Image (cartoon, rainbow, N blue to C red; front, side):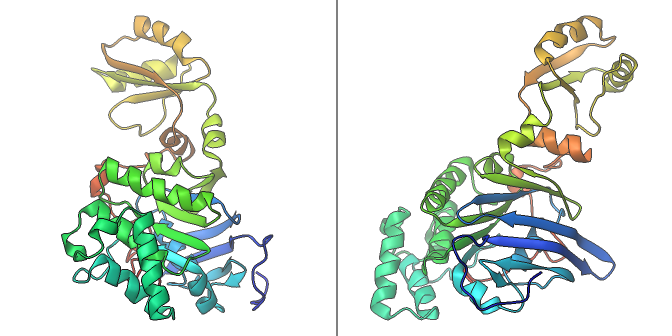
Length: 339
């Protein structure tokens, strides 16, 4: 990595540069040599299962942890040597609530503005502006603890935006929200990205990652693929056949014998990749020596890509609302809308 510099980031400076980053916790190697670049104004997703290293990398970029080896820069600033410069330029939403529950929505935002040196009048104007933009004006004077889950997450986002950050970091920011609340949250984030704010977010929800310009798939501390959502899915070619039978073990053996290659660990069903799945499915249904309980043909998903690359499912067996933090021991959780 180049040496730290106080020179402001130019338009050509990548928003994020990570080179050879390794992070160890004793004998545990949470990150195993990460390299990636995020362009200014890009919406970039880090997608992977729990324990993949997402939160560890997030914490390094957010200046909450230092890498064991390698280095990273945010908006041209070294995350270790120029930590304060990085923090002044970023907004952040953590997995866990960081707002003061007893204060009103407006006072949460006012406090953040004052902490970052805004004059009182300017902090009040900015708080009211953001509350209006995020549809929180009617809830502005209510204690945060009385707001719905979706409103509280939007308030977390509002708090991160008080000082108009150049880059927004989101770590599993919609964890536990219902589908409608998640959709509303990402609608606001997409608007920020469209206005030129760089957005770097971690998630294990496939549908959330789809909104990104590019996605890095991370597994066991390594980036296993990095591309646009469309290009990642195109790697599989054709489509996907999913089968559930009354004897999947026997069905798998027959498929292998007939030169098909069922993907490993596909869960409670068989998964096949094929260039023309709709054409081959009728033959499979006629000749499989077991009873087929369910058959489906579909376009490849990011889940399918991850399974193909790693042999493991992306989301695991837990329901989405129950999933916890990805990353190294400790989860990389922090407090404060902006550290």
